[in-house]
Every structure is written in C-alpha cells, then in structure tokens.
Image (cartoon, rainbow, N blue to C red):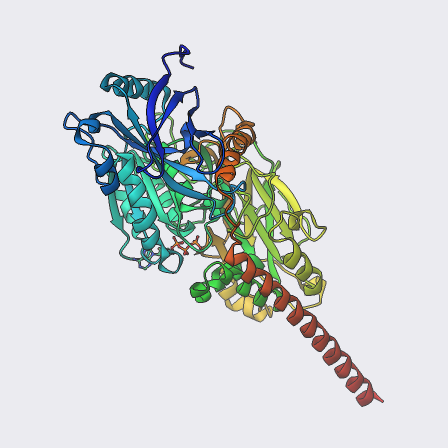
Length: 593
Ligand SMILES: Nc1ncnc2c1ncn2[C@@H]1O[C@H](COP(=O)(O)OP(=O)(O)OP(=O)(O)O)[C@@H](O)[C@H]1O
C-alpha cells in the first residue's frame, strides 16, 4: 500500500462525464482504490462520482504535441492551448445493481482539464504508482468466426477491439480458420512474443487452447501463459463461472490482467493422446443432450434445453463401472506407477505427470485401496464431473465448487424413471438445487476410473455383466446377447472415445484472467467485499444519476415460455404413455381370457 499525503492526491481541474461539451470546475481525488470527483447533475444537487481502479481500462494523456483530440465538440471547446492539460479516462460503468445482468455494464469516458501542465504529470506519476491504469502487455486475441451462431466476430469488432485500442496494450488478432485450429495455434505460439492469450468464442475454443498448450514439449512453461475468455459462444460456462456475464466485463478483465489459478482434469486412455479439461466431463443423459444439441446450434443457448428435453423423454441407461479416489491422495511411488515411462525427476517430462496411469493397463484387477467402487452398479443415468459451478449461461449446479482446490466434484444418478427426473430438471437446473435433490448422489474425488460397459439381457439382474467397451464389438459379446451402447463421453462439450478412462486432477495448473473484484487466492472474501464495494460506491451512484428501465433478458423470457410448453408436453406424454400401457395390459388380459 502506497502512503499518499492528503494534499498530493487532490487536483483542481474541470471535468466532464461522458459529454465533453459540459466541462465544469471540480476537485479530483486519487484515493487508494478509486477516482473521485464531484459531478454536476442537471436537475439535482452535486454528487460524487466514484470509479474503482478495477473498472478503468485505458487513458489518453498529452504527448509533447498535445492530446490527439478527435471529438468535434471537444475541439471546439478545448482550444489548442488546453490540449496539453487534458486527460481522458476510459472506464466501465455499471448501470444496474445486478452485476450478473448482461446489459448492466457500459463503456464510458471522463475528461479532465487540469489547471497547470505540472498537475498532469503529477496526476500521471501518482496514477502509475497506485496501479490506476493497466500494465503494458502483449495480447493475442483468437476469434472463432463460427462461435455462438457467428456472434463472436461482431463482439470482437464492436466491443473487444475498441476497448483494447483504448487500453494502449499491444494487440494482435487472429481468426480461426478450421475446426481444431485453436490446438495448432496454441501448439506453435511463440511464448516469448505473447503475455496473454485471449479467446473470443465459447468453451470449445478454450478447450482447444488448453489442450494445445499442454501438448507442447515445453508444456511446463506454456501452462503459465495466462488465458482470457471473452464469452462469445452459445454455452459460455467457463466465463459464467468466473463472474463474467458480458463481453465488456471480460475485456475489462483481460486488460486489467488479474489472474487466478485453475485446476485442470487430465483424461488418459490406453494408446490414445491425453486430453485436458478445464470445465467438465460428463457421461449419460447430460452428455448425450450436450453433444446432440449441436444440430440445434442456430437456436443459441436454447439448444441445450431442446436437446435435454428430447433426451429426458427418451431416457437411456448407461452401463459401466466407476471407481473413485478420495481427494488429495498422493500415490506411493512405484516403478510401474505411471503411464509416462519417461518419468524421472532428472529428466524433462514429455507431458504433465499422472500418478495412476498403470490402472489403465491392468484390466484384470480392480484398483487397489484407497480406490473404491461407486455404488449403484451396474448402470447410471448420468454422471457429471465438474470443475466450475455452471455448465452454461443458464445451467447452474452449485456454489460449493472451487476451481482451484484440487478437488473434482462428482454427481451421478441411477434414476431411470423419467417422471422422477423431469420435474427437478425443469425446476432446478438453473438455481443450484438440482444437485441437492435425492435424485443425485455426490462425491468429492481426486481421481476417477471409468470402465464403460454393456449390459446383458434386460430386466434380469443376474445377466448384468460389465465388460470393457472394446469387447462390445467382439463375437463373444454378440453371443452373450450384449446389445446396449455405453453412450458418449463429453469433455468440455467435445466428444472423446467411450473407453476405459482415467481422470486425475492437476491442481492449480493454469492461469485464467478474472474480474479483479471476483475472487483472489489470498482473500476468499474479496469477492464479497469487492462486490459490496462496487454496489455501494459505484452502482448506487450511477443509478442515482439515471433511472433506466431494467431490461429483462430476452433469453430468460424465451426460456420461461419454453419451460411452460415443456411441462405441458411432458404431462400429455406421460398421460399418453400411461393410457397406452393400460390399454395394452387390458388387451393382453383379454387375449389370456
Ligand atoms: N473457422 C472455423 N470453422 C469451423 N469451425 C471452427 C472454426 N473455428 C473454430 N471452429 C470450431 O467451432 C467449435 C465451436 O466453438 P466454441 O465452442 O468456441 O463455440 P460455441 O460452441 O458456440 O460455444 P460453447 O462451447 O460455449 O457452447 C469448436 O469446436 C471449434 O473447433
């Protein structure tokens, strides 16, 4: 903390908020965490404007030739003689008290005309000491022109690039040209040339970037490259989970450059390249719905609801065995304890080290203690492994998840009666209560071994036999009457082969940029205190100035209409099925008679 004497941080100047044609005399103060000045209100008394430094994304100060003033009004008002005393400050203003509202933030500029040239220099010196303005950095922004029904390009052109231009940071933009291009970019990127890699798209491109960086031979260096996510996809689960609901807030976080550590899930399969996940792994109903929703991409975020509904009324069972490892458990070193045969502390590792790789090869023995079998064998309806509380902008599971505590949160269900599942999904998928229902069981894990299998004859418990997926195609499996497909494995919205899979957590492995007020490793309460600060100091003031009609989120309205329709169709379908079944039973009875 810098000591500021009470007079050093106060400046007499003329200020203008948003509109440079109305400069008025004021006193500007640089406090330890915010800019303060008194503003004239057209109809009310003067009041104080407070701009926390974490909301400032750029400034323009006089060069020796004077400030480059483009605004025509400003040119008229501020004569050439004043140009070398003018500073512009660009910041994000929150209009509504709900930071989660997509429409709440907007970009704003304040103009300050100082009395003396020396004051400008004093202001800039103090501002740099206090961290008022963003640190100079080099950014590579990777834009997916297909992300989020093509909205990523518009978001990049209208929000991201204008804000980055004002930030004064060194920015390069690259468009992805084909599917999986993100992997190639991250694999080849020169780490000496870039300080932050920004992803303007959804979780799919972010997943590619994570995998591209961790598949490099210098992965231990590459994993330290901070990644920023600008939500421009259709799901945007990662951004939503780290407090980013709007591209403006995301770009602000990218420019300010505050980062937080992120756990990564490592997914290994025998004889296949390792896959890394930052968001979630799922198997069963939700995985099918997520992957099947791809054909409804044009619907935007609603695609998940439509695909989920279809999967709910055609519920499947997914056979398999799942073993879990308690969290924070370290494997005892053993010569065969890893897939990475090159593992040796004196040598550079080819890939991040996993501890239990040998479990993939040993298909004849069950994993030793402390691994244990997840109950409710032999089939599951859904299995979900989460690193973040949200799985989409509208899908919120729980706030009990921390994304850098080295723990994987597992939820699973074996409920196959669709009428038991449908209501919880309709009512509680967005409010965090779904996982509290009896329907779902949960475990905290450090590792997971999934052996997807198939079941024998239906409705006969003695023939339920779980075997490796690879054996399903064999002749002996066919002779056994094994018929059921083991479903899709979904990693961050991408499909991976359904096969024996080992999932381990790599604690606090990568860095992701976050809004400064959201979370800080050293201060878990910072989110709450800073949010409160923003609400009381900034938003309250802003809402006093203007009382805009709170815009309702269009998507929520569509969602509500959809949920009503969904419930109606469900009731009708349930009745139809019930009467159909009853009718058949009567017919059977009639035939027997
Ligand atoms: N130029 C391109 N042409 C075709 N596909 C691309 C291109 N660039 C990227 N992709 C692919 O687009 C897919 C979807 O991208 P992304 O996941 O970022 O957006 P989204 O699916 O709309 O968002 P979310 O995953 O959050 O729902 C990725 O799998 C990526 O490989």
